[in-house]
Amino acid sequence: MKQLTFVFSLIFIFAISGCKEKSKIRSESYTAIDKENYQSGIISTFGDQPTISINEGSTIGVTYGDKETIYYSESNDGGKSFNKSEIVGTLEGLLLGFSSGPQIAFTKSNVVITAPSRTGNLYSWSKNRAEGIWEGPFRVNDIGKSVEECLSSITTSNEGYIYSTWIDTRTLETSNENSSSISEVQLEENNNGIKKPKAKIYVSASKDAGKTWSKSQLVYKSPDGSVCECCKPSIESDKDGNLIIMFRNNIDGSRDLHYTISTDKGKSFAPPQKLGSGTWKINGCPMDGGGFTSFGNDGIMSAWQREGMVYTATSDLSEQLIGAGRAPSISGSRDHYSIVYTKGDEVMAIHEPMTMSEKIGKGTSAKVFASDDSIIYIWVSDRGIEYKKFNRI
Image (cartoon, rainbow, N blue to C red):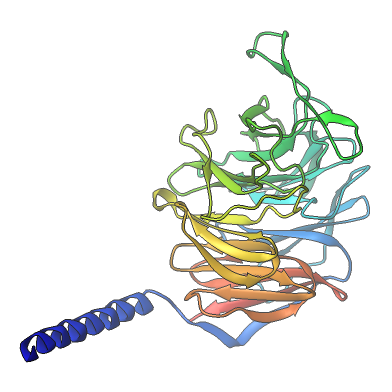
């Protein structure tokens, strides 16, 4: 009996030692955040639905809307300051709210912004940064009035292509590119008894920095009807050349997040995979599409909410509860990702190692962009569009 006790004791000691060693190795792969020396300020005293991106030269670009005008501001000093906002263009019926608004991406030479209109169309503007002149609007969707939900996202690839994805409500789909025959008419009845097109996920590409766009391509349609109509899809082109789209599906009443991957530059997409182990059956739209960041061939990390709780999930079905909140945004690499979300009127942030969220401000429409060197958060407050940038140490 004593010998058995001794053996179990040794096993326990070795197990604890092994855990400590693994913990030590894991902790050394992370960096700390300098919370004493950070930059913060106001990008604009007005505006709504800001989005953020960073180019290869570390220029930080922010776009946002106000009434029917789209604005752009950038920082060329690592977030210490932002220049005076410039007008990108005006758009009749510009829709701002619930993640609907301008989207931004950089190519090597251009900054590209897209925005939806209540007319049901999606438009793009492009500026060569050397010339400094905005061109546009250029229509993205090939079938007029097919972006009625006004929810879209864009990304840029290593080759400099711009990809845009959106929730599409076109009623007619041709059987092939050269045919004009009607292959199907998809309609569903909403709560008011009005027939409306079923929502699907579409994508289009631009090889000239948003000035012209390829024929819109169907990515996914739910076998049970529409995808979730009011939740913004997300798109990202990863370092390995894969194109990934995440969206909230609607199958058998469950509105869960799914993602799909294209390994041939958007020509075809794999069957969507569900994110998270739980499910959310809801007779309505959460109006919250979450977000994700890609680790290349190592998979993705997503952030989203279910029943008022924010979760993260990797490419498999595993999930981790973050806490109460909604509208999360996530950015970064496997060892350096950060998440921001709202909890009531509080802006909450959390970064690796995943320990505890902390309040960084008050407001709505929070977004984050994280790199191996820094993290920048933006959100809308009663003072305007605020930002806070932390450096890693």
